[in-house]
Amino acid sequence: MIFLNLVLAGLRLGLKNRQAGEKWIFDDYSYLCKGLTRWETTS
Image (cartoon, rainbow, N blue to C red; front, side, top):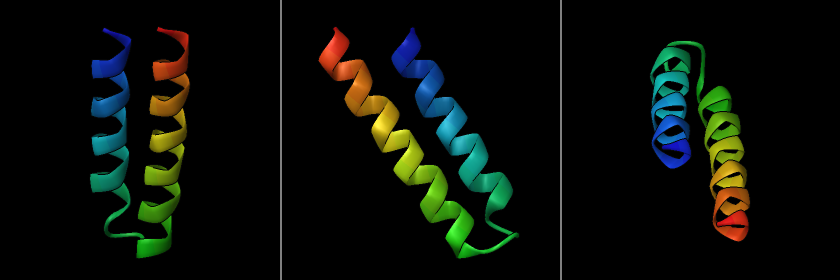
């Protein structure tokens, strides 16, 4: 469930910030990757 929430949050942020600029997209995906890595290490 946590995994799904992370993915959905990442997609939502990426789509929302797409209009704001590519730097924001990069920041969102790097944040998402950190969250996924943390999730994998705890499970």
